[in-house]
Length: 341
Image (cartoon, rainbow, N blue to C red; front, side):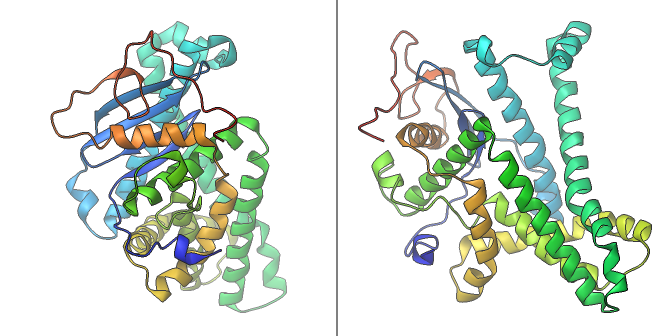
């Protein structure tokens, strides 16, 4: 990996961030959020809205890591559910709801059902993440006590197990066709942000020349969490498995806070130290991103442009052009041709 293409010389880091969603991308600036979705007929559906205002806690070092992580998880879940609903609206036979979703809607109504499902999704995501990446590794390596008395070595093995479980998880879900598409949009998001930070015109041709990895990616944040966890856990000894599980969960906010500060530093610095610290996360991003085609990049660029509109530009929800501007729905927009890809 050529780090000069990741830590781009003379690049101007932006506060704009993104998230890959089902058949699309969400881009967010401090003032405006844009959600771009590629519809089955090739058109781009766009929704723009004010970006959520952060709380005062989201500005305090260390604390802001936890606050922003939870806020991102909630907002990200909302956007994912919105993209699924919108695709169902335009192409219902291809995106059928499961029986549980239908049952909840029938009992509570669509609006209440949506809110309940979102809360359940966030709780499930947190529980699965803690269980899979915090609880399971420390249980799985309990045997290490029979091999060594070194507290540092025990925690190091636990940390390696955590990273291994995470990588196996990513590799397995990447085999699902829908997830592969999400990973392509993830790559398109990074390429587009690189292109913008370099000051180039936002075109698929320009964006395609960059790597699919980016120093400020959420994947790097998770890798920082797993690495810092080894160091923090080393100060906590190696008690019995119940105490280990409880203590791991208890210090997770501290680990997340430290990881967030490290990620912020990595996003605005290109020093040799930052490059070395960022390498593990960048290589793991190779698993969570895929090379996009021009169609994916068009959606990313449209969302990027839509979230950068001048103050006072009306928000909208509907079909848009490649500049993120609304168009009449009768004007079809075709997907990128094979010759362009």
